[in-house]
Image (tube, rainbow, N blue to C red; front, side):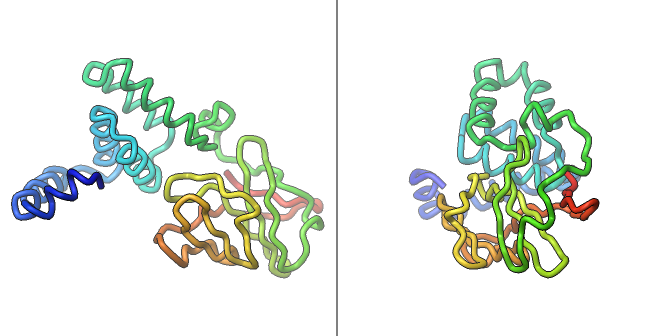
Length: 208
């Protein structure tokens, strides 16, 4: 929240409260994906970078695909104009989200080769590059857990050096995650993105 908006909430929270309630009620008959895509468009129209990132992440969590986000922006072209769509696209490129990469955006989910299963020991964690995506792999006995390396808050790509024991800390806003479960244990509330796994022919595969 900006300092100006924070000030207005403090001095006229009664009035703004009614306005925010109106916005919430106005979208109550829309499904979450549609409501989130509209919110993304409004943030692009206002060119509010933090708000754009916030509602983009919410839209993706609620099931919007990267192509649906791109299509929503292009459908809003008459209202937004090319300059604002380019502005939003530049932010998307800076965020470096694997889902928006040319390699993955048109691809159907499939089993992807991550590493040789024997390359990671029991209780060990490795950070592995798999094409457009980087993942953390944790092994416990014969069970493997694979997580996207991007923080679910603002998609910071978390480095291996951020791992201390079984705790992974995002360097940007210090969200902490339990690598054994993927759960956020401090600061935030959203878990690491987790992928289904299988071992076949001595190789570890993950589904994305």
